[in-house]
Amino acid sequence: MKITVGIPDANRAEVAALYWEAFGEKLGFVMGPKYRALVFITQVLRSDHGICAHDLNGRLLGVAGFKTHHGALVSGSFTDLRRVYGYVGAAVRMGLLSALERDTDNDRFLMDGIFVAPEYRGRGVGTALLNAITAEAKTRGYRQVRLDVIDTNPRARALYLHQGFVEMQTHKLGLWRHVFGFNAATTMVRDIYPDPISTPAAKTKAPPRTT
Image 1 (cartoon, rainbow, N blue to C red):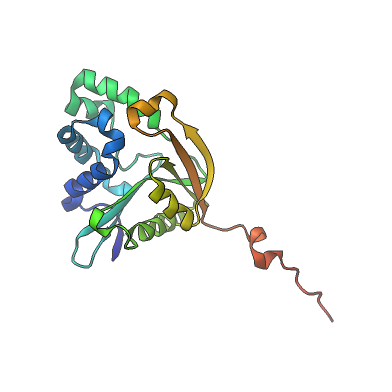
Image 2: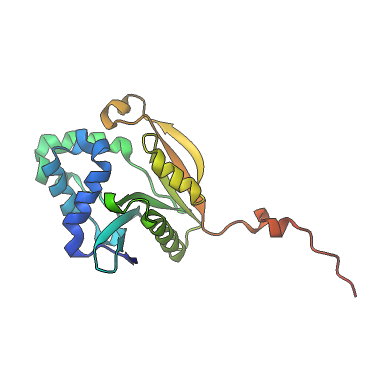
């Protein structure tokens, strides 16, 4: 398996299709129909905000996106939306998508979606991408990785817990659940630099020095 930061131009359409396969159930009501959604995603996809996993033959296995102050893997402006959905469609979608918006912060590197090709799930691709996100966060000087997982995705939650992520708080959508198809999202974080005070070795008292 080969992990690279950045999305090759040759993979843009495939990444868009995998993204929709993973998140279409959540975004379908807002971003549909599917053919328009794929056009939009392909156009706004930021290649510098994604990490790819390929097999040794160059087949795309999965992608992890991240968000910074400069953008996200899939975002786009009102102009981008209008180009695909028209003025009214763009205005409606911009308002609805604002309910899912997550702010970046200075202390935690925000992972903004992870998705693996269906035939490669359960083969360690997700774990490899999580480790790559953590490595990228460390390179950028962050101390923690942050993500959100929805309540209708217990498989992803189990993976994150197994990889050392800790649940921090849960946000309920309220009436928005009828739009997006899930009830709540839980914020989870993983330390990049574990606190030495909390490690077993640090808690063990050193023997008194003798002279």
